[in-house]
Image 1 (cartoon, rainbow over the protein chains, first blue to last red):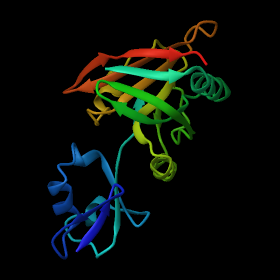
Image 2: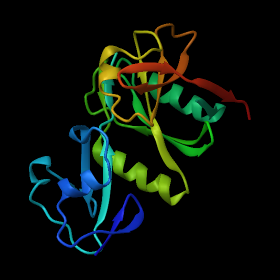
Image 3: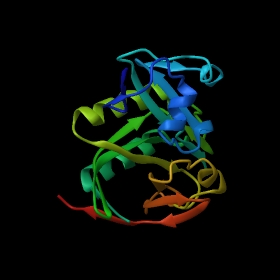
Image 4: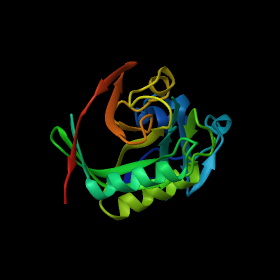
Length: 68
Length: 139
């Protein structure tokens, strides 16, 4: 099936989980990454179980914060 | 790494930072990358959802909206910026710990001396803060 990952169409295996996709995409420091699927943010607790569907639009958002 | 920013974008960051005192202000930077140079073409002035003078967190919904806007304009998110109302323009230990994207540039505007704001850009690789060559482009 195809996914739109960070604006780019890619072919992936059917029923891929978000965790597996994070691994495939070599996402740095995944513990600090928020994932959106079709503009909806997904709880990290669901990464291992939530599967993706053909045509889903995925974004990886790095945490942006800090302190002085 | 060299990073360029237009004077008009610097002015936007400065105004937003002053408008949000005493809190830290924050946002994203978007632009293009060519060889060893990042060109900031657009800055996003976003909400610090911590509403604190000591730390900041960018709102996720605004982050996503900015990312999509940047992409629609042929740009990519290059990193973020935030202000230090009461401390120098350098990455704090907290800034370094939370600079989790090694490809990003992190701009810090110090308002410690209100008469002489200081803007610097940093990258963070394996926990080390590296000052980048920030160039202000007069228009």
